[in-house]
Image (cartoon, rainbow, N blue to C red; front, side, top):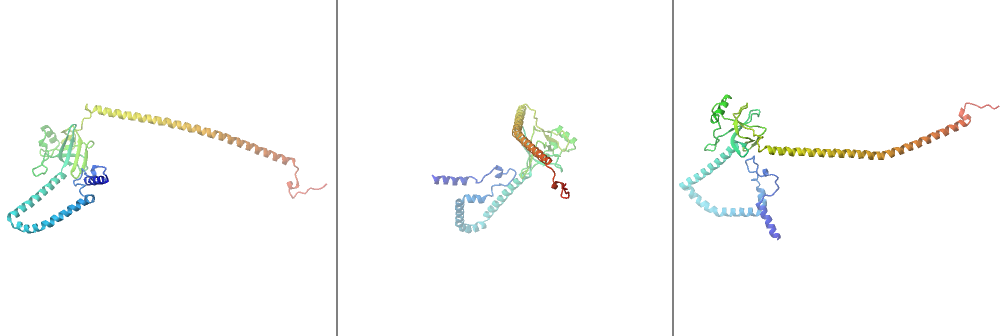
Length: 322
């Protein structure tokens, strides 16, 4: 039983990653291009020592056995014209494929993206995120597509729009061949700057002509929050917040009453303890004062009843005898 459990644990370690992860972003970051987990070869080797050793041993054996055949046949292959052409074509195809894939990745990292979040579906546009030098007037200029070589094609232009929208753009100084930028509402939109370019997402009812000022022709309209399907939800949320406020007010009132009762009980307890103590102190002080007064009266009476002596009158006075 112990051996079976140990083998299961070993298979578990081989199949699953080790360590603790709080978020999938630690393994696959949506804002980066490279695979963040591909460089953990040391951890893989430590968890699969036997498999790595057998694979390396097999690779060395195959290389040793094939070395002689490669040494004898490579000379003949390289001297053959067709073999040379095939090898050159293979190298050219491999390099072209690699260059094409790198170019495709470069296109993805250089093109921005705008996601128009509709009520029932989201629409994604490849675009260029544009702002003024001060970061204001945020807008996107969308691409109509890509070329056969995978490069971004031409942008949506004023002449591609509805004639009425195009006339509005011309009144603002746009030419027919100028790009038609789409204004976004920053208070609703989220802008993320990643290695794949800038990704802009905004809830909207759709793209319409921009009626405000600025440097845009179109705008992602603000969603209508007063639709019938959203009013009940907002009303429910408002009632929940009101109930929470009422509960908090009740708790505050209860705590206030408890505090007042605690103050009253503390005051009564203080009076019950201090009043007898103060009375006792007053009685003790009264007895002491009476005793002090009595002692003072007794000493004064003794002094008045006794005749003065020479010592009382002073040493310089002499009493003459009759």
